[in-house]
Length: 162
Image (tube, rainbow, N blue to C red; front, side, top):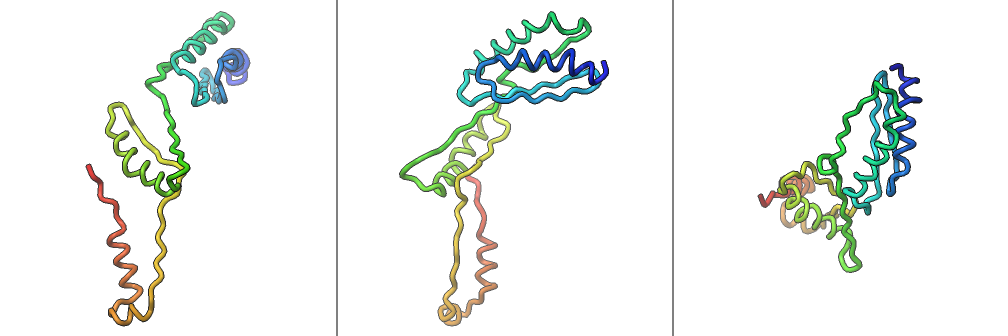
């Protein structure tokens, strides 16, 4: 089917039916000659197994109005393509400490779980260090600023516990 016809007879009816699903935040679709791909983005707080039933019901309602030649295969197994997000917040711990906890303790543990593909730490505040050399102490120790920079470069590594 040409793109314009596909958009009118397949993509748009599917989008309209899916817009009724509770918790839906965004619908993105790509229509090309003879195919339509529709991606649904939901609120983090929805029960995805219940939502999957709502999506399947919406698709069933519109199925009879689609062209007879329209058939689909939808990867609607939420376990196959699911994303999970977690937020670490504290009134007692600094953003830098939260970032370190997420990066060095939580992320490695999550990465070792079966079925986990990628763990991404976002936000927080990466630790930074500011070095202010004391010229008199450098001279007394026979150390130069390039020596300090090289020492930092050599030791600025995180050794994996695993």
